[in-house]
Length: 333
Image (cartoon, rainbow, N blue to C red; front, side, top):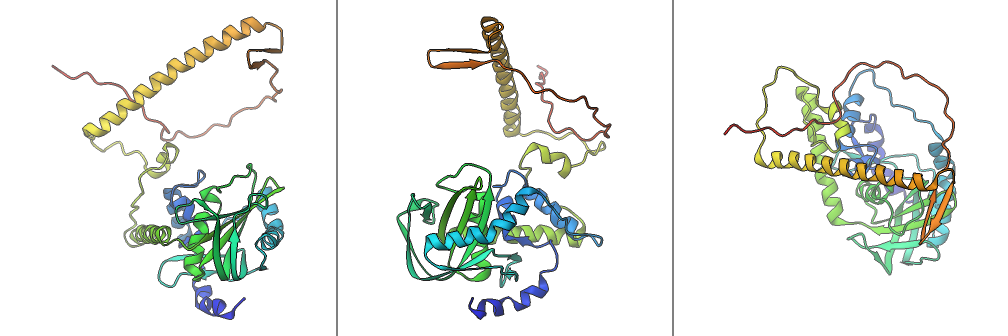
């Protein structure tokens, strides 16, 4: 690879010493596109990294192992499909010139004034700035290659959490102008998704990274956590502990309406559940001892469950509930 990209990052290598800074691989979580981690959970990870006794967690499992082992083969196959040389095993990180953003690349593709065409048979797809598949893209020079190993069935448009947002951040950090996400699905289906730098998405990344860093600085300076809005109910107890001394809040008309919608939804779920149970009971009565029933385009199976060993659930301390109790209040006339 051209030495200027290494020279650009010599200073960055010494600076990138902790997990406090936002990384390109964490950007999908910051955008709310990762079902396993929310913006607040990313904040918590950075807060932990600020502690004096922090040690980076080592995660070892089958997907990570096979993802690492297959990475060079994945990218080499992408290089064949894109008709270009590929460099892998790049160890130095890339640090953005002005933003607190960094990332590591899986590989670099070396394009020579090429036109990459969408080819469904080969599993190659080109995208425009709106995330839509287009006929072709003209690329030249080195570009980011990101390898992914996923267990889901292949799709024409990749999951936002599987590379598309990450490579835009990597292009921002490296100064490169094109990228390709190389995904191996289920260990046998291979797709390559090609992108050019997206100014609109990169501008949003810039804004989100600055906002994230501002919250980190507030925590470091004042010890105060400026949380993001809660992304999903399960993270609520980890974000806000219960203070029994605080006064009752006054709900706005808008938020009271949200609460009423939840009550209506719960009632609909309850009625639907009753209908499901009665309907299944009716079908079970019809089937009796039979395992299968079929007719009019419908097939039923009433089989057996797998045996399960007896177990006990260990005691655990009480914590804040992960759901709200909502009830209607009668107003005094």
